[in-house]
Length: 192
Image (cartoon, rainbow, N blue to C red; front, side):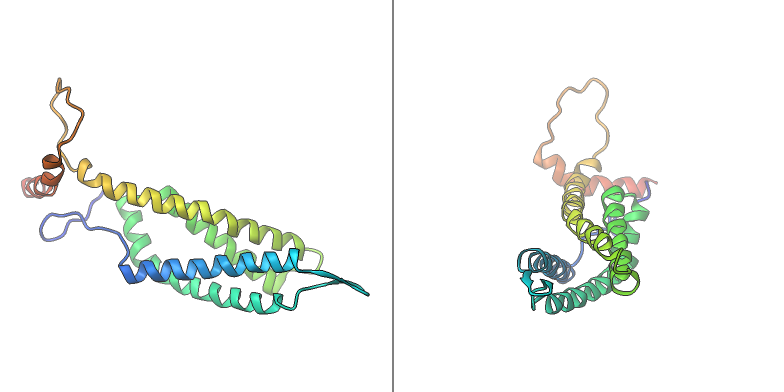
């Protein structure tokens, strides 16, 4: 596994800046909430009319908001790919969960494009069902990605410690040993 080191021998973190995290959460929440609102409007607020089913008058407005949030999400994805995604992939960190999120987003983009531009009326309900199922499935994938990333970040200080000598039975790490990990890592990089 390749690790990038800064000038002081410390491993570079791949955590997003606070501003980038806030935008990620706000835009993701906007896409999710507008999608869920459309589901509620489409399936719960639809009524019967003299000539068949009536759609809620809110649906077109919710879809417009959802489309705008989706465009913002594409811009956000474009901002994550060159730094966050590439850096983590090269470092071999959080690949499975990150790749699952990227694949899910890619499938959402394709199904959303299909809904807007391609789907014929006969296929539209199927593509729509696939799109919202993919969107809802991204919630646990995104949560798993965040959990794995934070777990990896906490474990890096422990992983940086040298291996225990054979026969040593103490499995606990003292806070002094964990806080000494950056110094150990720096001295290790000097020896190489």
